[in-house]
Length: 68
Image (tube, rainbow, N blue to C red; front, side):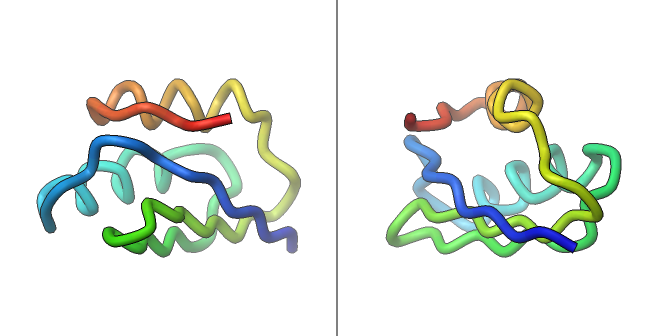
């Protein structure tokens, strides 16, 4: 297992958290997604390291932006 934390910009409510959690959670190998609305932190536990491009694409699909 591997754990990584990303920062997402633009989330303002529980719906935002759900959208990001759902999209990132659909990536191959993802076990858990924990989103902190206040800080924008998204902690992801997965079977193997995820490509940042894949995480960014999932966040974009949800309607938000991954911060480098």
